Image 1 (cartoon, rainbow over the protein chains, first blue to last red):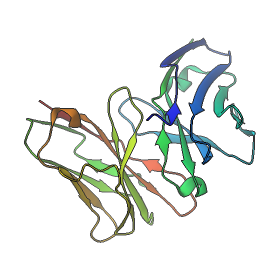
Image 2: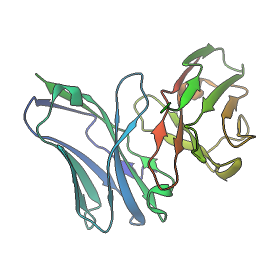
Image 3: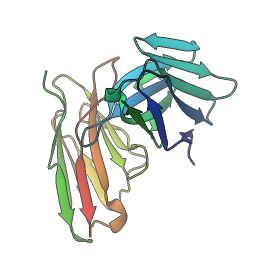
Amino acid sequence: DQQVKQNSPSLSVQEGRISILNCDYTNSMFDYFLWYKKYPAEGPTFLISISSIKDKNEDGRFTVFLNKSAKHLSLHIVPSQPGDSAVYFCAASRGSGNTGKLIFGQGTTLQVKP
Amino acid sequence: EAGVAQSPRYKIIEKRQSVAFWCNPISGHATLYWYQQILGQGPKLLIQFQNNGVVDDSQLPKDRFSAERLKGVDSTLKIQPAKLEDSAVYLCASRPAGGELFFGEGSRLTVL
């Protein structure tokens, strides 16, 4: 039962362009969503989050959009940089904001070409 | 600030052998997690501790996996006996009150 899905295993974009990573979820009880970034041989690091009371959260080049009716969230990176090349995981939790159990998607590998 | 420390980084064992992983969380973080990440999948929670008490171990295969955090600081995850499907990266994470998860670099287990 995959409650959080990232249907694109990989994405390749040119430096300077926009990267859009997508994530779908099935559990309407999820109320907090996060994106993590992972470089090879390192643990995931927190990137950005959004509560279900919002539909957008922005932090520098990173923006997360939440569409609750579609149970869909996306991460936009503008402009993309070669250092953004990594695996991106979306995650969701319910009932306790960011303190709840996190359910992760399978990850999307982003490659930003110079 | 020191990050979440894990050891060993890599371990290769034969099936049916045992293995133990160690985690030292960031100082002051009361909540500690062990995740299993199988290749091509996202991390899956195995067990969550709040201080030295277990909050959630619903996805821990208790017939072969065990974990403890006796003094509410560092933690050990053990697998005995190991199966081929246990090959994965075992990630430890800790979290301050009201904050986000900080992950360690992980311990990569290969079961032959």
